[in-house]
Structure formats: C-alpha cells, structure tokens
Amino acid sequence: MDRTCSLCGGTGFVKAEGSVRLCECRFSREDVNRVLRIPRRFWDAELDNYECETPSENEAYKEAYIFASSFDPEEGRGLTLVGPPGVGKTHLAVGILKKIYREKGIKGLFFDTKDLIYKLKSLMDEGKTNRAIKAILNRPLIVLDDLGSERLSEWQRELISYIISYRYNELKSTIITTNFSLSGEEKKDRRIRKVAEGIDLPKVLMSERLDPSTVSRIYEMSKVVYIKGRDRRRL
Ligand SMILES: Nc1ncnc2c1ncn2[C@@H]1O[C@H](COP(=O)(O)OP(=O)(O)O)[C@@H](O)[C@H]1O
Ligand SMILES: [Mg+2]
Image (cartoon, rainbow, N blue to C red; front, side):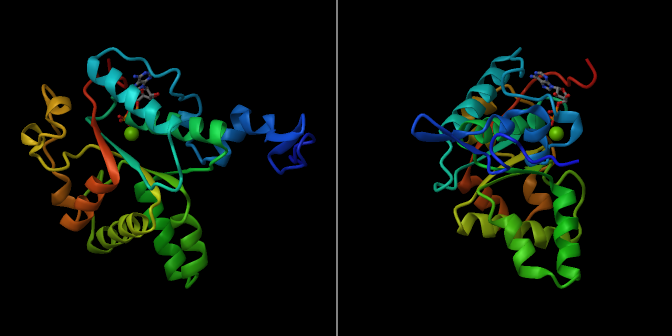
C-alpha cells in the first residue's frame, strides 16, 4: 500500500497563505508514533494525559512541559527523569518527544537503552560503523529509556560512555529515564535538595553502573528531575 500523504507528497510540509506549515499527516496518531519509534505500549502517552497526583508529579510535569515548549536543538540541553518503577518516567519522555515533533517538526527518536547498545554493537560488528552509527548519534534529540536498568558488561558500559560523551561534545539533547540515584548525595546538594526532599531515592547509584565521567557529563548536560509517586502498574 502506498502510504505517501496525498496532501504533502511525503515532504511533511504544505503551502498555506503565502507561507509553509507542517502537514496534518504528521499529527495522525500512527504516524507520530512510527516516526519517533515509540513502543506500542506508549502510543497513547501524551503530556496532556499525564495525571498529577503528588506535588512531585506536578513538578515533573511542569519541567517536562517547559523542556518541550522551549526546546532548541542548538543548545544541547537534556532532561534526566529519576524515580522508582511505574511513576511515569517513560510516559513523560514519550510525551515530550511528541510535543516537540508536533510543534517544532523536530524528529527525536525513542530508544530502550539496552536495545540501542545492541543495535550499535551489531552495526559495528557488521563493519557498518560510521554512517549508520552517526545517523543515530547525530539526531537532535533522543530518549535513552531505562538507562542501566540491569548490570552492564564492560563493552556495554563503554558503549554508553561513548554515546553520552559524543552527544555531550556535539551539543545534542538527550532525555534519560532511570531508576538510579545520580549521586546518592541529592539531599545535600543545594541545586536539587528541594526536589529530593521526601523522596525515597533509589538505592543503586548510577556511578556503580556507569563510569564517573559519564555520570558527570549527564549532570552537566541535563536537568535532573526526581519523581515520587505510586507505581501505576500495580495500584
Ligand atoms: N502520572 C501518570 N498519568 C497517567 N498515566 C501514567 C502516569 N504515570 C504512569 N502512567 C502510566 O502507567 C504505566 C507505567 O508508567 P511508565 O511511564 O512506564 O513508568 P516508569 O517509566 O516510571 O517505570 C504506563 O502505562 C503509563 O502510561
Ligand atoms: Mg520506564
């Protein structure tokens, strides 16, 4: 079946009153989800249907909204969402990607972090290195979902370090979701003490899974947001 849009011929743009606007085909549910490679489970996730039940969820929603509406692909600013399972980290990350695509036409990409490192490894093993890998790494915006959710082997850690430092150096934006505490010192850290208050920080530290230089870059390239809420998969 030919899926080329009859309105824009697949370009994504249509002429309107002397100017050019984004074609409506960009906004159909299926199209947005496919373009951004959103996993099916999250096809309905939007910033607009993220419910805020706790002050912390409210804060996280606000940060996500501000991040999406002020997104500038030249700045390399990122967002790191930290919290226990089921509080909506992936939901928010997906909502941000969609809002940025719809409003600014910027195509981010969603990756489960583990999938991405296996994908990059197989590209490297096939000798396809640079072009295919750079096409991913040079995207203006990517989501690394569930960073370090499992114990990592040496090559996996190295690859994550490579991805983060590449994006750090090239000023590319990355949204990270993770179950880790970044430092374990959040309650003493002046910059984030307020948001970390009253939050049961995850016991595993990111520095136990990733190189210290990677963690330090993540700190510098992103705003860190801690989320406290109920596990929506259970309750
Ligand atoms: N605040 C929320 N409002 C609406 N749905 C939510 C919210 N938080 C989580 N969900 C839903 O609950 C499920 C689990 O959320 P998810 O984003 O996968 O959590 P996490 O990534 O933090 O483990 C998903 O189906 C998600 O859409
Ligand atoms: Mg998740």
